[in-house]
Amino acid sequence: MSCPKVLEDAIEGLYAAFSRYPLPEETMPCSCCHASDANALLHAEPLRKLGWKHLGEYAKDALLVWGGLEDFKHFLPRIFDLLLNASDWKKGTPSPERVFRRFHNGEWRTWPHDEQTAVEKMLDAVWETVRSNPPIEGGYIDVDQWLCSISQCKDDLGPYLNKWMEDERLSAGWALSSLILGSTIAYTGPDHTMPASENDVERIAKIQEWFKLPHRGAWWKRCDTQYAQLQEWVRSPAALEKLRRAEIGCGNAEMVRELANAQRCIRRRGRRSGSQFTEIDSTRRPIGNLQLIGCIERCQLGF
Image (tube, rainbow, N blue to C red):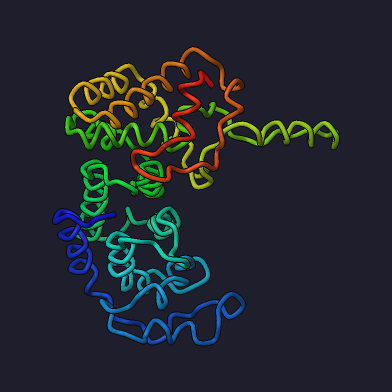
């Protein structure tokens, strides 16, 4: 994700709000889960110079099997600085969903007001950045991933979806088509549970069929309400109209094709049952902002 000023300011706000928490001498990593030098890595550099080689494992396990709340608050600004500023996520970088989940683990709605405000501003800045990034050849922002990340610490996506609907920039329309064509949001049904049966043979057969269906990302499992909210919004007439307006106003042949195909996916999903979408590959991810070939071809072929 590129880092516009709104995101830079929000990150600085985190540093300011959490500066009251000093570097702990001992962070108490679980000795069964982490190497003996794990604590020393967190002391290897000043806070703003720590990298993922120092913080990667901590960010994954903070508040679970590594350290307490005040420890986490000390490192929080740098963790999100790295997560939101990175131009390329390298191997070992924790997923955004996993890092954002730490707010839930830390019960952030019980924190001091200025800390909650700083987190709110960061979330707003993330969402503004997702909606405002124009298409860049060969790259894209995974809208589904960032909405899932926000959902790890927000129970209601309504305010974010309202901002999206009100945002008439072409980048906001493109973000919607990216979500539809680059995730399974348009194809998944309301039931996300794996089938169960007392008969092992029958259960195996049902599970095999279940795996052929499109499924949402694993981190949405903790956010059923938010996923249903997003799914209803994406399939709404208002969202379809938003795509149509973007298509009319974009003036780019490739984007016209993408926006039109996103509309087609939604319309066809509205006319068919989820069981007829077994051809969708739920593990597919866009290889570029205007190269969402897998789903586009399926739309053109009528699934």
